[in-house]
Length: 224
Ligand code: HEM
Image (tube, rainbow, N blue to C red; front, top):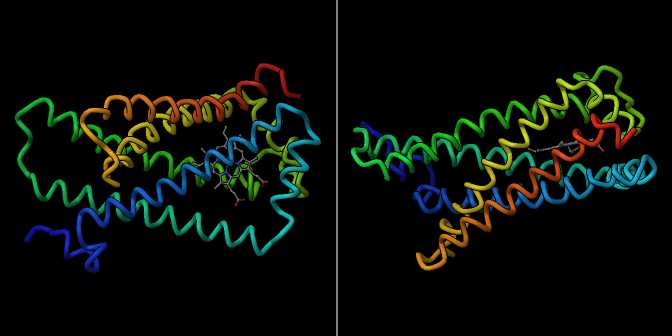
């Protein structure tokens, strides 16, 4: 027997729209985190004192830091759970391949979101071992010298390239995700959906380019 929306949760979460809303709200929280994170990262362009002082500030209240981390972990878990369940429901509802190209495009987009989501999950595990806990870093300074941790890491061209490629994937994932957000919350209308799509792309690639600017600036010798 194939899965139905109500097999996979309570009344609200069990409905397809409930899962979509959970994905949209958790996705929006994660996007806000990314915007804050990239704004913080860009302080490295102003020098060592600026970024290290900023990092010190973030770590100054263990309670706030851990409260925020727990909200982040919960958002990632709920976002992934809802995504996988929606994908399973979609496949179960339409086991036969689409005949029309327009429909195939929609399926390709959701397949891409799942695939890029897995890669970004793997990136996140590596990233935390790299810059937060240090096990994946060649010479990690655990005493809060974030400037040193970032500059020594990105002097390796392979590591800088890996980050730039992953940021490209972040841009693609966000551009589709931000547009889906407007649809899931019923904010879309056919007369301005083309503009919403363009705006989603602009915001997504601006965030991705700002992230990528840090490894590029270190590799190019602008930050040292
Ligand atoms: C070039 C891109 C990026 C750079 C240079 C970067 C840099 C950093 C650094 C230096 C830290 C440690 C901060 C500290 O301990 O004070 C950090 C933590 C973190 N980053 Fe990134 N980051 C990048 C992209 C991303 C992306 C795309 C994501 C999410 C998909 C992400 C998620 C996180 C998370 C969850 C943490 C741990 C925060 C915590 O300590 O609770 N980062 N990042």
